[in-house]
Length: 329
Image 1 (spheres, rainbow, N blue to C red):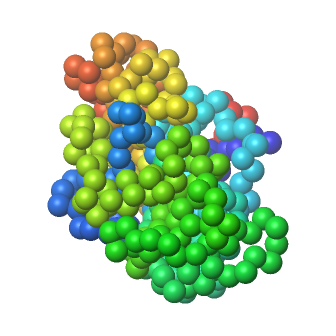
Image 2 (image 1 turned 45 degrees about the vertical axis):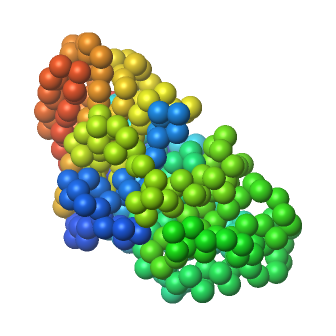
């Protein structure tokens, strides 16, 4: 079954009117108000980075039913799949949501997004190759109880508190394996696993880097790279955002005209009951403006595209009153 325009925009969080409540709670106030708060957790590894962010505090009640019913195997209509302002963003929203239910289940945290399952509340979800970050108003004792309990099934992992990073308690497996590490404090839950996230860095090291960046003890990607700072500032402030920089291992923006981009960030925001707005930014050496004109934001009802040297920016507006069921307009 093909997803229609309404389904795609629902996946990106544009199904009903919402009140934007601001960025997720993080370990330290961001001194740069022009940057999204989740940027504090982002670091470069060998000069590269990729991420997906979902503002669950703003969109959770809006899209949870749609995400629960979404089938990752279903095809997205070609006009969305081939639009870098829509395809990667909707995929990022689904990926972050599924990571909680499927991957955090082995730690008894798979129901963390359910309102009645935990007293802790979630504001933001951030996925990178190094770590998965949950921000919000968390109760460390509640998380501790889940992590350290005796496993009642073979797939459940048991952890113990073994260390501390920047004031956060660090948990590692009681069996002594080093394939996972978890940090917990009042504002965040950070999970690093070798199997799920695919980082070549050891989980404890990835945890130290990610948590340290949020605490201001490790150089952030926005501090290390002015170009990435521009990308994130230009297009990373939406309710759902995805991005890549450098030479990531699993690029999301392998589109004609963008395949050699130094970095790309794209985001969508639920503007009102029937409207989504998007922002896009890319750094492309000697961009082919004609190719980009036929690519970026072409699924939008309204679009603007600007190419200034190697800096490409675009905005778009999608209205759900126009639906498609066959993948063409």
